[in-house]
Length: 195
Image (cartoon, rainbow, N blue to C red):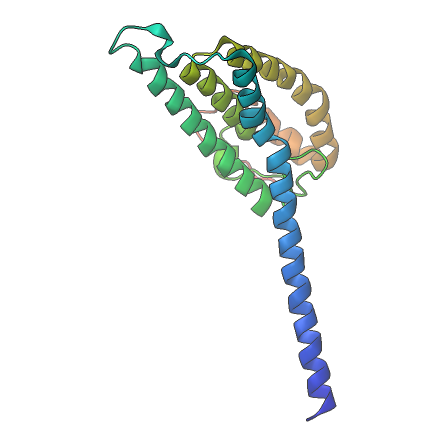
């Protein structure tokens, strides 16, 4: 057997293995960010609050059939929130080349899909999930958690995340945030040209 062929074959295997390891590491970074942020906020903390307070009141003690309204509203909000969160996570990973976590931020400004309508679709999705859980379970304590998380993000995002994105993406991000609202979606998508 030709030694150069063998060397080339081994090099090819090494390069392929390195690419697979890199893809696996990217996937693990996404899983870690998802586990530490949205899962803690939307599952672990609400479960802990329900466990501590024993406060589940499906239907809010309303008479039938009105007791179904909060259940359907809660499920609807959770579903819309999950769609926004999942779509945002994929866009940040695929286009932005980063995660939702501040310690591993996106490398590229994402202005595709739902990001053409709203500046923070992921956090809006998390807000909807938390509000939906409070309504679905009829828990005032989950509603308090939603309010705390909501106010915390109303403070954190403009004071810390916004300036960080200004520095990282410069004029493109400034143009983007002038045209795409942070909290309330645009009626039409923004197709501004970014360098």
